[in-house]
Structure formats: structure tokens, C-alpha cells
Image 1: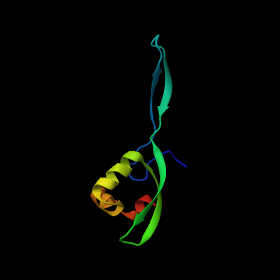
Image 2: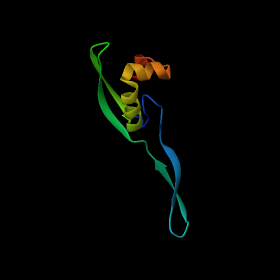
Image 3: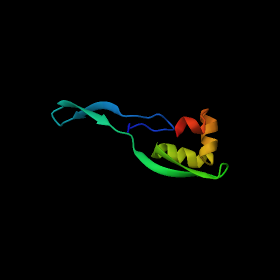
Image 4: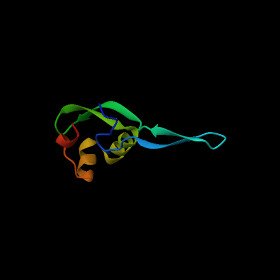
Length: 80
């Protein structure tokens, strides 16, 4: 399973660990992905999504998954 948010498309980033002596080693910054079941009252069904916590907060502010998808120009089949 890829480490990518179904709604926002956020994935891992790369960067450096920097020690006290300023020696740099490569590392990865992973998104905070969570598996969540989202109920869609318009369709009377539940969908299981793998999404970031940032997408969860935005979805709550927009008033549900369908409103979020409409604002982003996506459809339900694009994210399931």
C-alpha cells in the first residue's frame, strides 16, 4: 500500500537529519496517514479511506466528504 493520501495526494518528502556537528544524512518525512471509515449520508453508505489528519480536519470544516470532493473537483470513484 502506498504512503499517499487519497484526498490530497500528499506523499513522503525527503530531507536531511542534521546533527550538532552539521553532518547531514538523508531521511524521509512521512505524512500522518490514518485509516478512517467515513459515512456519506447522501448515499447512505460508509467508505473506508486512507487519509491524512489535515484532510480529516478540512473535511470536517467543509461539512462532510461530498462537500470536500465537490470543492476539490473530485468524485467518489476517484478516491475509493
